[in-house]
Length: 442
Image 1 (tube, rainbow, N blue to C red):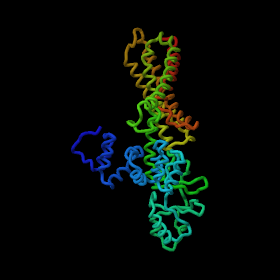
Image 2: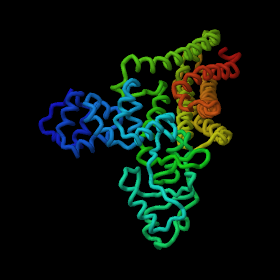
Image 3: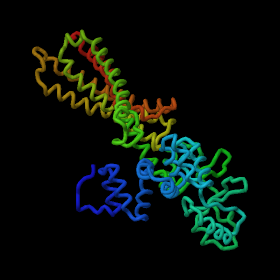
Image 4: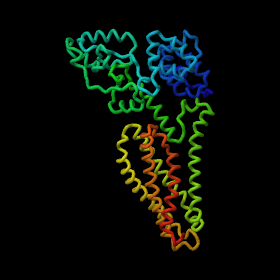
């Protein structure tokens, strides 16, 4: 429901953006329709397809057409793909014939591919044009909507990309020079089937305003601009964070996700993790005899399990993110392995020292065991070192294994790694205890 605040200026689009989520659907439409057309267009274009559909879906076709034709072709494709399947054809018919064909071409690509993000309208030139001819030709092209005005792309008669030239270079060049003489032919291009996360990495690496999309024969298909990829990066990052949290990625914002759908996406992983934790009970049952002989060992089980789980969660989160932003590659697995072994040892020694002090300062933990406190402290400390090393190694290597299998590394969520390390951590703990305390407490 709308937040009552008579001091808010609802005619200001920044106020509307800030409080949009506080308004119910009817109030949103009312505020939107009360705006001057120019402000309404600016607000409409600032929204994603879900909000845009809410505002115009029930309008008469004539009014809906005017709003849909405001959208860039790639945004129009996103808008239509978000519509119910039965309504998509009707919305496509609201576009002019040329735009309709271009949008249908974009919709043929998968949503997470470069072809599904690109815009097929861009400035194009021929290599044998003079600079003066090129400027006149670009001026003529500017009468139709294009995605960006910063670059022009030089194509041959087969539409193969030969080079790129900026408007600044054209304006500063001698009028009689040929375009081929001033164009740059060392190009960074995006294959039309490249994944969105890889595209984002290219933009981060090269810091261009736009990059060309080409097919496997180097024919120009469209361009992707920096602002196109910002939304993609946000969406991909949100999906990765949700997966790292131990759940399936949501397909819509939190409040727009149906209750049953959200429960389903969360319950699946929770059940998998619950089954995994059952093995912890199985592992403990196998060491029941040792626990009965030295009940004091059970006191430190939470300490051991949390140490391994936390170190594994840290390592998996670091590696998942580093793989996502291309800081590390699959071929770097062996370097990561040795680095995490060293890190695990250093971290284990830090935590093991704290564990040793905890046991030593605990005094007489159980009647008649005071003379064995030092040996027990060594057992706990050695177990912590082993478990932390194993947790770090497991957490780091699991994302590599998933990527090698063609799966999303983010699936190696922190809860999953913690669950796996819990079970193996118990085995390490009781194995160390058996080796050090046999004949003393066991």
